[in-house]
Image 1 (cartoon, rainbow, N blue to C red):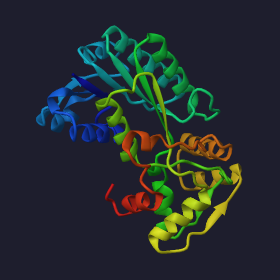
Image 2 (image 1 turned 90 degrees about the vertical axis):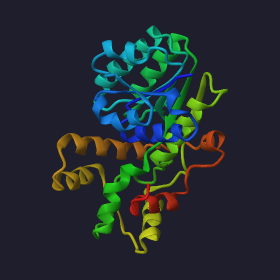
Image 3 (image 1 turned 60 degrees about the vertical axis):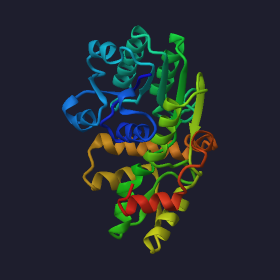
Length: 287
C-alpha cells in the first residue's frame, strides 16, 4: 500500500507525515511537493519524495501514480486560484486511478456561509463526482491562527475582537494532523465526513484561557468592524490581510465556526487537546 500526502513540507502536511511515520513504514509513504529539495530530510528517512505542483497539473498525475490512499491538503491563495488548483489535483487523482482520497476541508463546508467555504464545497463536489471513495476532514479553526493576538497580549496589549459572542471550535494543527493520519492509515473511512472541532469558545473565553496560562488578566476590547480594520491598518498590516482578518471576525460573529462535534474522539479515541493545555504548548513553544 502507498499513502501520499500533498503539501508535505507545509505547516499541516509536515505534521501529518510525522504522525503517519509513527504507524506506517516509510517505504509505504510518499509525498508530493513543489520543491523536492525541501523534502531531502524525508527522502533520507526512506519516504518517496515526488514533484507535484498544483500550478503544473502535468506533474500531478505522475506524482499520484501507484497511490492507494491520497491526502489532498487544501492550497493557499484566492478562491478562484484554489478551486482551479484543487480541481486539477482531483482530476489527476482520477486519471492516476487513486483508490481513496482524503481532503482537508472546512466545517460544514456544503452549507456554510463562511467566506472560505466555497473553495471547499467545490472541491468536495469534484471528489464525489469521480466516484472514488473519500473522506472529508472538515477542520475548524487552527488555534495557531491566534498566535499574533497572544503575542500582543504578552506585550501588554488587550485582546481585540469584532467577533462579538461568536464561538469557535479551536484545535491545534497537531490534532488535525493526527486525525488525517488516522484516516489515511486506518480502514472503514470510505465516503465519510468528519467535522473536526474542539470545545466551542467565545473570544472572551479564549482570552480568559490565555490569561490563565500567562498568569495575568487579559482585557478584551470589543470593537465594530470599522474600528477593527483601523486597528489592523495602524499596525501596518497589508490591506489584503486587513480584509481577510476582518472577514474572519465577521464569519465568527455570524456563528459559522460554531460547529460542535465529537469526531476527534471517533478518530483519535480522545477529544481535541484541551484549550488551556493547547495554549500552553503554543506559548511555551512545545507544539
